[in-house]
Length: 115
Length: 113
Image (cartoon, rainbow over all chains, first blue to last red; front, side, top):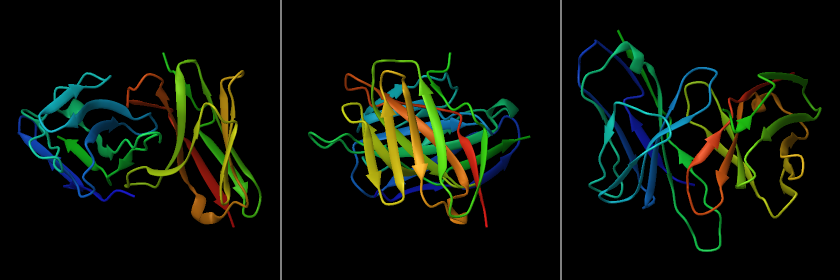
């Protein structure tokens, strides 16, 4: 099972502020993901990465950006937070083993409230 | 258009009885299915998975059944325990190497003592 960490767990911030949500994993997984989830709704993939210097946009359009400079670290940044960004942000990682279907393991999430 | 549907937003069962959570999908290209459990204010926890080449996978109290012709899968929990109370998400992966998962909206399970 992956050890994956997210900070902060909760964040209340004013409109227009720049924020960075941190995600780190200690299992050496190549693949990492960011999901956004609103209450009662499904998780939507907003960003993913297959490895260092690899980032792709997910299925749900997001104004956030990500970077992958180190294998273990996959931060998400919002340059100017807005109330519409209020949501829960979940980070995940996975490792593909030849012949074995991979499983994504999730961090505890960051609950963001933009006032 | 939702490709993975969990039509029951909530389910309540008595402790010791069976819990059956259902999931329907529309995309025949899905080849791998997973169930996650999520407690409030925590991230989803992987429970059990099944490949499309199988119709059943069992792990302790948890069994997942897959009916490909009906595009339906279900998670059975026997016996149900109060600690199983959580939101359960069904997820599916598209065949062809894409690692992206498509999630349902979840079913909130309450197990009453």
